[in-house]
Amino acid sequence: MKPTLSSPAIHRTILNNGIVVLLTENPVADIVAARIFVRAGSCYENREQAGLAHLLSEVITKGCEGLSTWEVAEKVESVGASLGANAATDYSLLSLKTVTSDFEEILTLAGRILRLPTFPADQVELEKRLALQNIRSQKEQPLSLAFSQMRQMIYQNHPYAMSILGDETTMSGLTRDHLVQYHQTHFRPDNLVISIAGRITVEDAVQLVEQVFGDWQIPPEPLPSLNLPTIKPEPQQRLQPFKTQQSIVMLGYLGASITSPDYAPLKLLSTYLGNGLSSRLFVELREKRGLAYEVSAFYPTRLDPSSFVVYMGTAAENTSIALEGLRSEVDLLCTTEVSETALQAAKNKILGQYALGKQTNGQIAQIYGWYETSGLGLDFDHQFPELITSVTVQDTIAAACKYLQSPYISLVGQETVINAVLG
Image 1 (cartoon, rainbow, N blue to C red):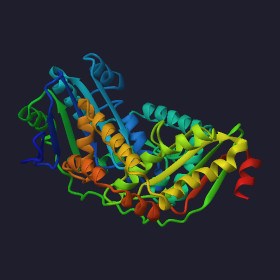
Image 2 (cartoon, helix red, strand yellow; image 1 turned 45 degrees about the vertical axis):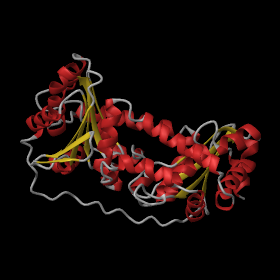
Image 3 (cartoon, rainbow, N blue to C red; image 1 turned 180 degrees about the vertical axis):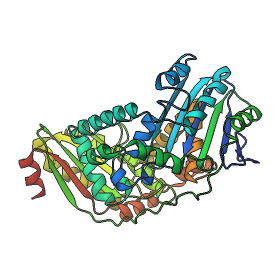
Image 4 (cartoon, rainbow, N blue to C red; image 1 turned 90 degrees about the horizontal axis):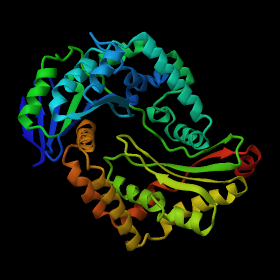
C-alpha cells in the first residue's frame, strides 16, 4: 500500500487492490460514519436502461450471500446503526453510521453487501413498482414537469438529460440480470473510494478496511471508459399543458462544469439571483412586484457542464410578465454590475453554507469522498473557498455574457395561457 498525507486532517491510503481509503479523525463524539463511493452512476447506464443505477441502489441492501433482506435489516437495527445506498449521476454510494464499538460489525456487513449482493427477485420487482409510482407522481407535479422538459432540451443525448429514475419505459424493462451485469462491471476494488470520519485512528481504520476488503481481487477486464457526447447549446422552448391555476416559468442555460474557471462566478450569480429570501429574484419579483408564489435559481455541481436554471411559480394570468421579469433580471447580469456589497453577501452565504455542510462525520466523509471520487482531489476543500473569495465583479459580468445570453424556455400551465405566451 502507498500511504500519503494529503492534508493535516485527512489521511489517504491506497490498498494493493486499488481501493482508496480516506480517514478523518474526529474524536469529539463516539460515532463513526463511512461513505463507500463507486465511480459509476447514471452516466454509466445505456440510454435504454436509464434508472438502472437507481434500482441497484434500492435493491443492493436487500440481501447478500448468507443473509436475507430481513436478516440484513435486523443486523443493522439491532445495534441502532444506519445503512443505506443511493445513486447519483456521477457515482453510486453506500452509507453507514454507527457508534465506534459497532463499526467493525457494520463495515463487515457493508462489505458483504457490496461484494456479494443477491438481488432477490421479489425485492427487484417491489423497488421497480415503487420507482414507477415515483415517476408517475412526478408527472403530476408542474415543477418536476418543467425541469424534465428543461433537462431534455439542454442535454439532448447526454445522460444528464434523463432522470435518475429513468422513465416508465426504461424502468419497466429492467431485470435482475441487468443489475447483476452492472454490478459485475462497475463494483470492483479499483473503482472504490472508502471515506471514513469519526472516533477511530488511522491505523485501526486502514487495518479494518484491509480485513474486510483486502482480499478482493481486481478483475482482469479493464475498467469501462466513459465517453460522453459533447453538448452543443441549441436554445429552444417547450410547453406542457397542465390543468392548474398557476404556471411554472423556467429559463435554463448550459453552464460550466466544476472543473471550469467559470464555475465559481456562475455559482455566485446563482446564489445572488435565487438563494434565499434576500436574493435578487425574491426581492424584485416576489416582494416588490408580487408575481411569484415561489422563485429560485439553481446551478448543480457536475463533472460535465451543468445547467444554470431560474424559475418562478406564478398565477396563470401573470405568466407573460413573469417570463419577461425573469429574462430581464438575468439579462441585467451582463449589462449592469452586481454591487460589491451584493457580491460579498453572496460570497458570505456560499462560504457559510459550505462550512455548515461539514459539521457531522457523515458530511465530512461525504465531501472528501466526493472530491476523491470526482478527481478534484482533497485539496479542493481549500481551493473552493479561495475560488469563491477571488471572484470579482468583472468575472461575474464575463461569465454572464458567456453563458446567460440565450435561454432555453420551459413552461407548464394552462394550455391557452402558455400558447399565447410563446405565440
